[in-house]
Length: 169
Image (cartoon, rainbow, N blue to C red):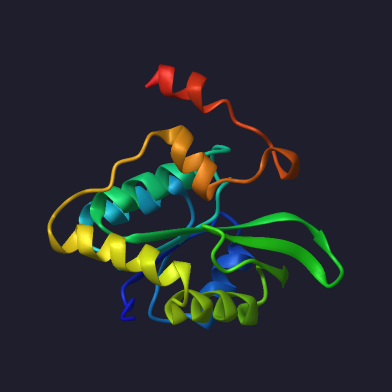
């Protein structure tokens, strides 16, 4: 699967440096707002974003914009502690979790390779989004649906009341 045009959003500098080392071809930004700006100015094939940046749901807003622009979005965020470092989930959950630290470039490389391998369910996820892009059909989801698919589970991270947030928009 050809996912060469990559956008990565992470608010921690050490994570951005590791991501850039693993994927030198990627565009790297430090906030959800920057990622949304980048998505508005050019097309990307793949977007990998942290969830919590300048706001607890900034990454989910990036996912929403990526879907609307025809990119394939993933969230990549710490969900707990494992035996060999942090447990880091790549969502949608087609790839499972990774153990390590986001400041380690080999973790980013493993995640990217897992995404581009696109086996099983992730293959159909990619194909559906690429088909929508080909025919110019934006994928628009309610914030609560995006949170359910791409966000952290209630027991593993801070819970954001997206219904209340949607009411503010």
